[in-house]
Length: 168
Image (cartoon, rainbow, N blue to C red; front, side):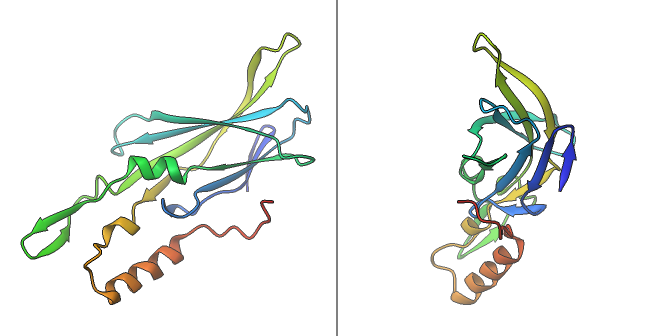
């Protein structure tokens, strides 16, 4: 659990998160105003030395009678990833480095509320820990053998998010 100011990140993906599994964050705010919304900004970077680029913004309202917000970035991350397969004759090989099938990202969570005139204002914010999204499921070609598929499936399950909480 990561807490700064009045915002707490209750749950977040594992450090290396498959983009074809839920990439969920559960965030709580200490602000109790009914009109409070949470804004999440997805930032990515191409290399460890490049700057962070804003790629997407999501807004969520508070869950009824609850003090938390849930964000899933899997669909957005899927659109940013592709495959690194290189056709090397009769077989495929992974390209190195895996520039297209992995992406580093982090999320900025921001409390947003409306003032007395109905204008939105941003209040406190918190950054998530840096994560890496992996395009693990697209690496296996349909013509690949079953053993390779099973090995990959085990790896994905080991890296997948462990959300035992009830999100209903």
